Image (cartoon, rainbow, N blue to C red; front, top):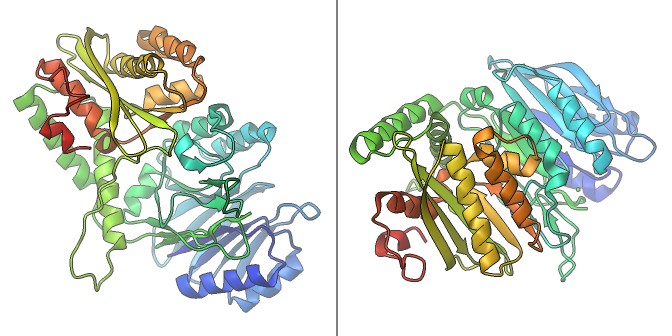
Amino acid sequence: MAVLTWNVRGLGSRESVRGLTNVIRKSQPEIVFMSETKQKIKYLEKIKMKMKFEHAFYVEPIGRAGGLALWWNKEVQIKILGQGKFFIDAEISGRGELVWYGTFIYGPSYKDQKKEFWESLKSLRDDNDAKWLVIGDSNVVSCQEEKVGGLPFNPSEAYSFFDFVDSRGLIDMPIAGGAYTWSNQRSDNEAIMEKLDRVLCSTSWNIAFPKAMVTLDIAMGSDHAPRTAPQPLKDAGSECHSPDLLIVLVEGFSLIAFLLWTIWKSRNRFVFEGSPESPEEVWLRAEAAFLEFSYAQAKIGPSAPVAQTMIPAWNPPCEGFLKVCCDAAYDKTTGRAAAAAVARNSRGDIVAGDSACFYASSASSAEASAIRLGVFLALSGGFHNVTFESDCKEVVYRLVSGVHSAWESAAVEEDILSSTSSLASFSFSFIPRSCNKVADWVARKTLRGSCPSSWASHPPPELESFL
């Protein structure tokens, strides 16, 4: 099954209709969702019939603003469960596939409406085990790396989004074909590009459709790029959303296999290296490995002569920005911990680094201390425009959302927030362990007492291999 979603920014022009026709002809989706149609149902029904879709559900625009359209063909069974100005919620099945829930969204652009919107989505599902897909234009940027140009990322605008994703245990699926789904269609110094369109899925949905993939197409007649997802989804994008976001759901390798493999590797690391890992760390590494495999396989066509493994790599910051990668190693038997902070520029070069040993009450407090070390590194170096990256999702979430910290790391996290107030521009971002190898290596070596003191200025060959 394929699902196409697109913020069409009005379906009244010939160019936008032509763009939609081309995307549908190319990707052959069973489901099409469009936001900001800005058209009456009678007009949309004519286009639907031309595109040869049998069924439809609409949320009419208010005047010439908004409007949602959901089309599907006879191969798919859809039961509408709820609707609103900004979403359509449905139960979906087809071709003997499992029943799953799909929520098609168009996030509000005004800040005072965002919290209410994400809270309303939270109320749709209180079962985190449900097979749930949330897809469409979120109108949210979740970190500085998801935008280029314009004002710096403001974490406060994403708090309610983070709360929704975290409370429902959703995964923000990567999009192949481009990092940004919207642009203001300028090519000069005033150009702005952002990732606004998203595909979020629950773990059970991800397991049920292990090779689901999201792809981005070229924007035509809109400032959003369309997105597609084969088997079972596809989504398109508005000033210019890319028009073809397709999600592909293909039966394939099970996440369980990767989880078992990761548990075995973690066990060996503990037995032979004395390096314990928390269940959360094991799960995140398994999930990252599984996604790497799934996306690589989905992108390899049948005629590809050689299979190429796609390993998610650390992404350098934009010119004029720095990323400080932070990580901690923790021995829960002794309480000893080590933190590492590595500042890297747009070329990926290490411009500064620091590491330290200390005692911690938990892995979480150790990870928070690593981020604090990164903040102190930025302040001492006089750095501005900094993104602090960590592979500890819970600490990053607390720092970004402002929710109450765990008691063992509350003082450290309060110290982080008060210290960053003197930085011109900063953000906190979660990255998978596979993208945080440099800081991970330094932290582990520091804990064992085998990290050379000159690692930042003269990286040893083993560390240099990760750069």
